[in-house]
Amino acid sequence: MKPAISALALAATLAACTPMEPVSEAPKASDARFAVTDTKDYDPVTVNSLPADPPTLKVAYAAASERQYGELRMPPGKGPFPLAVIYHGGCWAGMGGTSNVGALASFLTQNGVATWTPSYREIGSDGGWPNTFTDWAQGLMHVKKLARTYPLDLTRITVMGHSAGVTPVMWLPSGHKGDEAISADLPPIAAAVVLDGPMRIADFVGVDQAVCGAPVIATMMGGSPAEQPTRYAMLDPLANKPLVKRLLVVDGALPDPDPAMIAALRGQGIAVEVIRVTQDQHFNLLVPGTKDFAAIGPALLDIAGGR
Image (cartoon, rainbow, N blue to C red):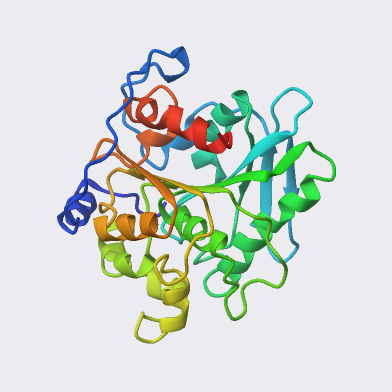
């Protein structure tokens, strides 16, 4: 098994944090859906063991790799339903998978939000530039095809990403296609959710060694920021603005979001909300019933519902 995020790695990561601006307090969860019923701490393995509703549909969105599939979960009823496209993490190197976010996807679907969780090629499975980026984009583009059969409201798409899955979440709404990554138009994205991951990937160079056990970012990007400045600029939300109305940022175990970046995104006209959860836990926020999920659950439903 590949290394998980360790306490030592987290300590090194937290040492790199910048001071954080004031953030939202955890809401008082009077709603039973957000009650704290689970006091365990989760890791990349145990989070996969959580019960999740079976997908309505599991289907390939491309044919170059067995990793190019997604899981669709549909709420009961006629719809049309808002759609959350959820990208799993895993250090860009196969340490995660769609099971990581199965419980989260199930919760959203049980509460009226359709979910689509694409898998994708990573380092070690024919990933890296441009294949990983192509898969992120093709996974998103596939929702147009899904909407021909299922009642999806493509005017209310929210992209969510956990950990390394934040990279496509910050990039895809920008509309910047990259030099090889995308060959077709993406559906418009209304909102984005950052679940404890780096909003600007260049800031994570060096930190990736501590968290992932190897300098994975340069491998994925095909070089360092000095060697591939155009690619890193494409993934800089200040240079390549996400075209969303709302952005929810959940700050957990990984380095705090840069307050200057948050301010700049707000200055670009994006309504940004930041919620700070337990600072030494990276996976609890994915688990309904935990204290961290109770802190973010109402905001997740609000933004994913297109309200």
